[in-house]
Every structure is written in structure tokens, then in C-alpha cells.
Image (cartoon, rainbow, N blue to C red; front, side, top):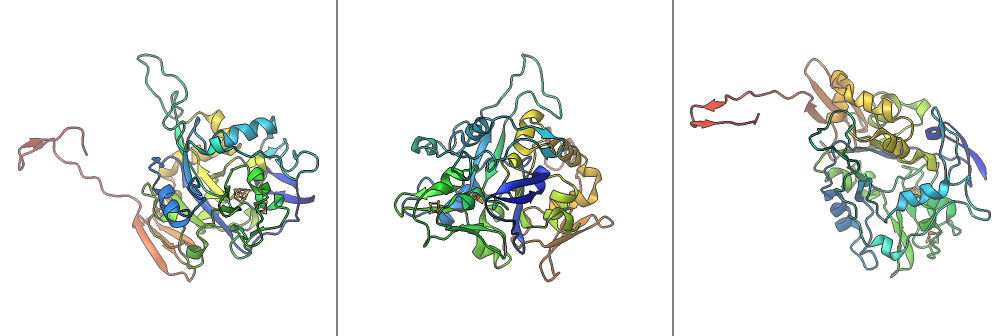
Length: 378
Ligand code: SF4
Ligand code: F3S
């Protein structure tokens, strides 16, 4: 085992291979306050990549409903239970990662889901946690009754457990963008990767007898286009880009700005130790304890910053650029004077410009021209 630096857990950790970071790291931010669970992303991915034989059950992108959903069933609670207590000391994780907790003779602590676990992709959907007394009502920010949608793809981890576990070295991280792929000609179907990925994002194809996974839509990314799940999202909750190391973060890079500077987007289960590269803006009305287990100790700061976003022109501008262009936004700028935000491509060309504040139209209660009354609409 080598010793590598994992900034998400605030310390060094053991990993089977030495630290090698790609030239650029694929990353994405998903705003959970905006996801409506419509599954457009799931279908866009499904119809693009997993229409073949043996892929029927595969959802490289899935959207599950927390706290009771999960695809495969119980993927996270089962591993959390195996891992035991996961204490944080401030921003430093004081427990064991899944590499450090690996059983003797294995590289990763994991489990293999069974066929039945893959049979109910929408189990637990729209089932709320908590109770609301008769006559009571919800107050902000934390609701008593809550659920939220959690869209998931492969995290194209900095320290992938799938890659660490494969005895054939059939999985690799592309040096140019950090996207994690299975070399299908090397794979022999050992399925150690399926067992090792704590996010259960490597899927075995029983017809081809090899494993397959989200490829980050690299043919699009290579042309400066964001992945399908991002560009088709009707809730405009997603943005894909490239993330620098914390010490190299630049304020005009969307991912760096959201993850490293405003710290409004957080990794999923950072305590597993993979440095996953899909980041989530936590849902503001959900029980904090639950969110801290999912996204680590940064939750309170992230929610506070997000809620103050209306007074933060840069953050507001950045959030308005989600879902507004297919092209990868390499850098952005806000224009407080004109109330606009703009995104630029690799060559610095403007590819999108949006108003940050839209005008309000107050329409009269009684519309004399149409001789109608308007009720509760704006
Ligand atoms: Fe591998 Fe799973 Fe990480 Fe994707 S999420 S890179 S499949 S360990
Ligand atoms: Fe390796 Fe997984 Fe294939 S462990 S051989 S990539 S099934």
C-alpha cells in the first residue's frame, strides 16, 4: 500500500497505488435542491449507452430517493454498517476508509449485491421520513417530514476502488481527463471491481461476461461537450467541468469556485476514501444529521452559503449558468452592473450569457380587458 493525500478527508491514507493525478480531472456539481426525480437523465443515459444484451438492468445514471431508496437496494447502508463508526474530528476523518478497513488478503472492504438487489430501481421513491403532528406545519430550514432525490453516476474517483481491486489491471483513469474506464479487451469478468466500488457503479454484463460502467460520455467531453445526463437535465441541476487540486483552485473556474472556494458542493460519502468527483449541493430542508453522514462535515457551511446566495452575485451568477449550454464552461464571469453571468470555452470565447435577475411582472387582480379575476398567480 502507498500513502496518498486525500483532501476530502483532510489527511493521508493508504491506497494500493501511488498518487498520480490526471492532467485535468472530470468533475460535476449536482444541485439537490432542484432535482425533481423526473429520470430524464436516466433515460438519456440508458438510450445512449446501455441498450445492448446483458445491459437491461444497468443504469449508469440512476436517481434514487433518500432516505429509503437505493439502486442496488441498500448499497450504502450495507457498507456503512460494515465500515462501523465513522468519526470526524473537524474536517479530518478519524475513522477508517474502505481501503484501510479491507479484510486481510483483500484490497478493499466491499460487498457484492445479489440479483434481487438490482430488481427494484425505484424502491422507496417518494417515501418521506419523519412525522408531522396533526395540525402542525413545516418551518424552514429543516423540515420534520422530508425526502429528496439523489442522482448518481460514476464519480470518476481520484482513488477508484474499482481500479484498486481489479487483479487484471483492466480499469484505468484516462490521463487527459481523469475519466475511469474498463478496458473491455483486458477484462475477464472477475467482478472484484463490482464488489469494491462502494457506489456500486460498475455493473457486470452476464452476456458479454465483462464489467461495464459510466464512461463520463468521453466522446462528447473530448469535443468540449458536457455528458448526456447533464445536457438533458430539465431541472438544470447539473454542471460538468474540470476540478483542480485545492491549492491550485482558480476563482473563475466553475468547479473550483463551487467546490474549493465557496465550498457549497460536497462529495458523496467522503469517508469511504475515494475522493469522488461528483459534488452535491445539499438539500436545505433535510435533516442535518442525515446530510452530514452523506456529505461529511461541510454540510452546515454549504447550506448557509447557498441560502445566502441571493446576496452573493458571483455565486448567484454561477448557479444561473447550470443547464444553459451544452458546451463545457471552462471559466465564468458575472456582471453585477448589467445583472448578467457569462460562460467561456477553452479558447476564452463567450458561449453563454444569462440574466441573473429576471424582471417581476405584477398583473392586476382584475383583468379588465379579459374580464377575468386572477387568483394566486404571479
Ligand atoms: Fe470506480 Fe465506483 Fe469510483 Fe466509479 S464511483 S471510479 S466505478 S470506484
Ligand atoms: Fe477486473 Fe472487474 Fe473485469 S475485476 S477483470 S474489471 S470484472
